Image 1 (tube, rainbow, N blue to C red):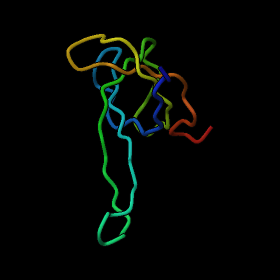
Image 2 (image 1 turned 180 degrees about the horizontal axis):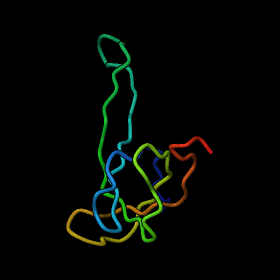
Image 3 (image 1 turned 120 degrees about the horizontal axis):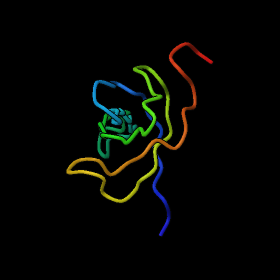
Image 4 (image 1 turned 90 degrees about the vertical axis):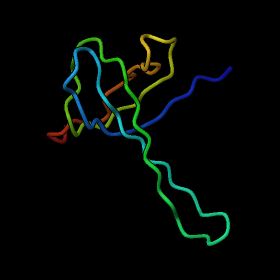
Length: 83
């Protein structure tokens, strides 16, 4: 089975070893054809607490780590400071 990956933005880093990542999904409305955007928030495991709010990250699906955590940070693509 293929590994699921998503790219999103960190919106909260207030928990220990966990960040909340918002992933935006854009698709055309089936009838009206207008582009609709839906945002899904994932609780993501961040072992080293390296992510900060505003970082762009790639996340991968993993085994259940807690009641609501099933994703882990694969890489930090861009940081809030832009590097």
